[in-house]
Image 1 (cartoon, rainbow, N blue to C red):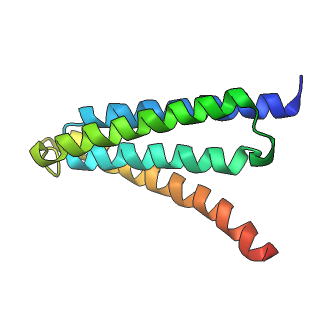
Image 2: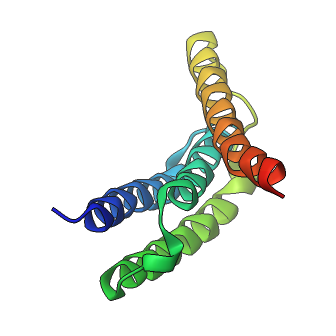
Length: 125
């Protein structure tokens, strides 16, 4: 199997997962949960940037990328529409702890991936 094809298939799966997360974010019960979902979706975009070979994109992956970006935009629109009606935090302590954990893990994931993208560029530049 071609390594570029494996990389593109893996990137297509990751970008589709991120797009699904962005659409599901509008179903969150609180703003904290919504932010956690969007940080996860952004981390998926950053992860694709980290592992994808941008010079070797074939025709089918560009279409997957464009479709995923359309789904991301729909997810952002739906979440922005739902934002004013949401509370900041859940009333239940267990749900609040779960939301905080999700937000923390998503933030650490996004910061780690961002660092993996930035640090080599700083060292090489």
